[in-house]
Figure 1 (cartoon, rainbow, N blue to C red):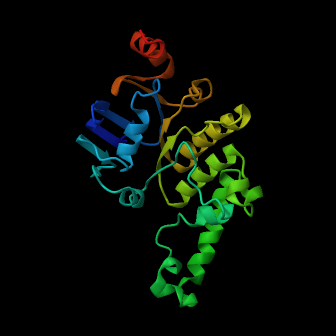
Figure 2 (figure 1 turned 135 degrees about the vertical axis):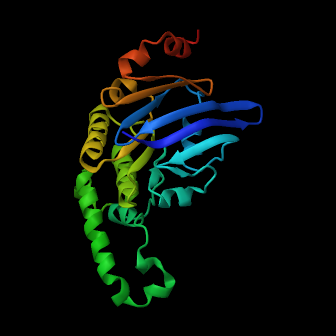
Figure 3 (figure 1 turned 60 degrees about the vertical axis):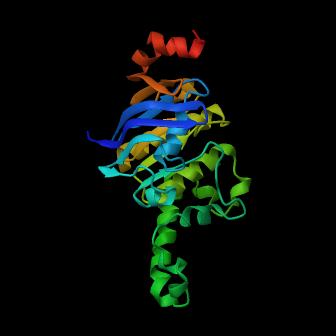
Length: 252
């Protein structure tokens, strides 16, 4: 399987802090890959570099054969690489349906020059609503489609972010702690949903997550980081039994 994301010798510093140190990694297409490591190991910084929120100091980010190093987040988003955040970034006073619809790229009704001519965008708007409802059904949020985003549970907010990423047409999604603060039952449901998205829609996931008791049951590949460096990768059992990983978590 080809790589959806290729990282080549990525480094990122903040002052004297070496947050990411010469990391090279391939994320296989149509897979679920998890980044693990103790706090401060560089996982979220790496996600921020891939998604364009931080430019790397050196190295290259390749997305499906396209160099995206240093591109702006919205340009990367348009290419089909979306992300979620540890603290969900939703439109809190808008409804669930509207939060999904807003992610649709190229909607003619959003352009001022077209908005005055309903006949030019009404059909597309109807199709957008239908697509949004299908996505809400897929992520188990159809029952709350008319609720305001700020009334959802923490787990539902995480699912809504995933739904919004799907609405953008993204087939590669970066998830930053998708089950943080979520009750165990829903946490398992979220990860089971990721497998369904992988298998039925061919979506690739790169995930940062600390709740390994849940997450490791569902992932294809585990990548371990410590002190900004990638120390090993592979299947969950081999990575967790690697002495370098044990040392990183126990602090030597």
